[in-house]
Amino acid sequence: MAPARAGRRQLVVFDVIAEVAADNAWKRFASHRWRDGCIARDVIPAAGALADDRAFDEQLPPRLQVQAAAHFTPVEVARRAARLLASSRGMTVLDVGAGAGKFCLAAALAVPDCEFVGIEWRPHLVDLANALARNLGVHNARFLSGDALDLDWSPFDAFYLYNPFAEQLIEDTFVLDRSIERGPDTFVTCVTGVRRKLARARTGTRLAMFHGYGAPPPPGYELSAKPPVGCAHLELWIKTSSTTRELDIERQETE
Image: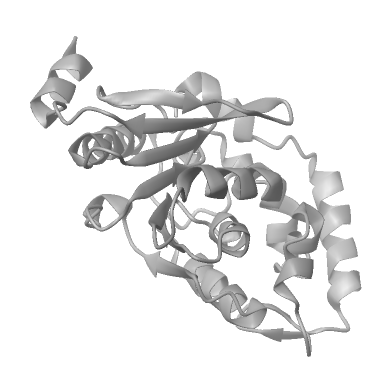
């Protein structure tokens, strides 16, 4: 994510508003049981829990409910991205920076004959996302704990990026938590690493971006669709050329 884009994911919430929202959330959920870090009810229909953003947020712990709008993909965007990315049965899509799993869960419900995999730095969010998948009965979404740059991307047919490195540049007030390393150097490392991974992807690879990731797609990708979603746009890029090489990207980054 370029610095100019970082602000798009910032949710300007005054402390008093956050306190009131958190307090209301606690009161609303005080009567519910908790299991695996998320709300546990006797029956949680997936379609209902993923009907819209508010319905999904209600499955989260109160602190994440306050932060969800700033950090997690809107349900409408997830559905549209899923249909753009999963163009045929059996495709596997990787979400880089999955957070609490919102994109993968909503996408998996929208396209049940494809698999959606999310990778996330924070183990506690991975545990939460997998718990939500179990509680909601979503069987074609799963979540991995770790650094996306250490993962082999070759098994995946498509990728989803929702400004996953915004936290590297924004103020402490707006981060999910302080459990990961942050800073401009980390930002550059992550953006450069993702661009190299995309450059090595096979021809036909599909890439959906909402607010980007900090750099343009590498050479060889063409913009296929740019539908408006709310006040922003969802971009679908398709790799049409296999001529891209890591050396080409490194040369462009130094120019």
